[in-house]
Length: 400
Image (cartoon, rainbow, N blue to C red; front, side, top):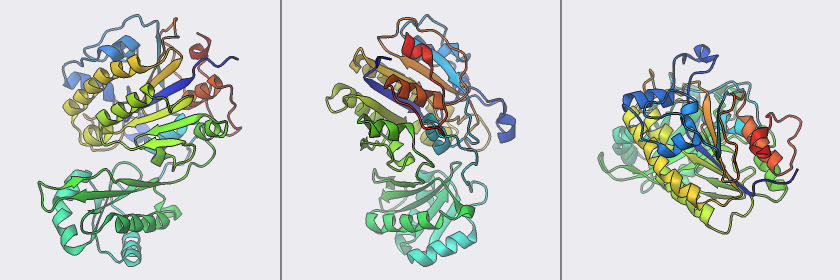
């Protein structure tokens, strides 16, 4: 088959689910719908670009209507893996089926034995040790951390151990060293979390504290070769924007740029689209603020504003793309800001696929794995997945 697209842009609107899955009751999420419930709280979303790509085909999103979209396909994806976290969703897009969920410590904090070992090996006292917003726990404990040069340890709904410390007092190198120790401890089966994250901050008192861009993730390596690895091995670009590089522990990446916000992520993606360095392959983008700033904080209005802001930038990206480029917009799980608690929600995700080369775009039936994204990307470049990877090609995209 002749290669159809030269560059593929895959954008993950982190946590923007579009309706609870058939097994959502098992996760306590029956009834969740991130996209729809946000639109209801906002009394309608103003998202003309997403509307023109077919988002209204997928759910009754207030403020949108179904339209003809000949240059795009719209569909919903069901998650095949057992979980609803960041790594599980992203890894599945690249072909990995996760059957055993990563450990979470949302309700209890980390076990005393883990904390004791971390204190002994780092030489620092640990404070915090509960599930919290990163900015909130720094406001609450930042002064104590600076005074005692301790470590603020906290978690979230994700499988993650986060350590916050002052960039000016503790220092980046020391914070990173402590996180390396935590990663080693958390390789034990009883503590096996997906990521350990360094969260440096600056400032001297509440109201002044601010997290910096020197976040550093220590993630588990993917359990096997992914679509990204296959692309890289065959000489294709795999350019990562945002936390993609960290989610895959650097495996399969040929380039990466950090981001500080959704806007920054779109700025950098648009620059890549306009530039000459990304010639052929995959540009994989994560826009984390939907999840971190609005989903977990149960802020539907802020989340809705962020969706509308993304929609405005979407036209900039589309105008920067070449005729033989492909854009895929999706999510990795749900995080309904109208739901109870602060956890992710077990949901289907949207997939909108756009190119000027598409002429018969329409609404397609549901797909039953996020991995269909990765398999379609491989087929575009005439590559084969390994025997253990999952996913089925979305033929309409490549045959149009």
